[in-house]
Image: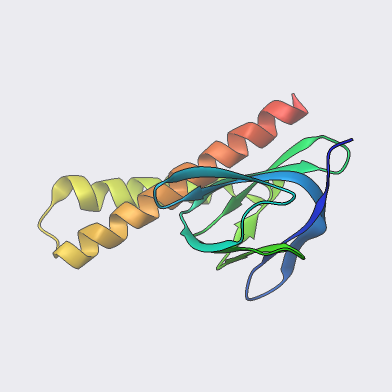
Length: 141
């Protein structure tokens, strides 16, 4: 059996996840990183996207998380984010609407640079939510 380590995901509203895990995979600003027990300590910003968790039974789970901070320490690893959702919690219609709104702002231009940059972030979040929803749907099919 692989070594386990404590992992938590916190949002401002709830402790989203807390358990011993074998591995986590999170998207950092410069690419994905996998963290296992005994990993070097670090703190880094994360991007919105899929968080993959290999639980203590060796089963991969997925969730959507917004941008945040990942802290890996000897006693536990913690991901602090604004929001996190399991695939079954994602409102697909809302994510599709968010994606359309963001694409309209980006493609139609005319907006301020700030508006376009904000729309790009919203687009990335919506696409990641839809990806998480699809992954959850595949598991139930």
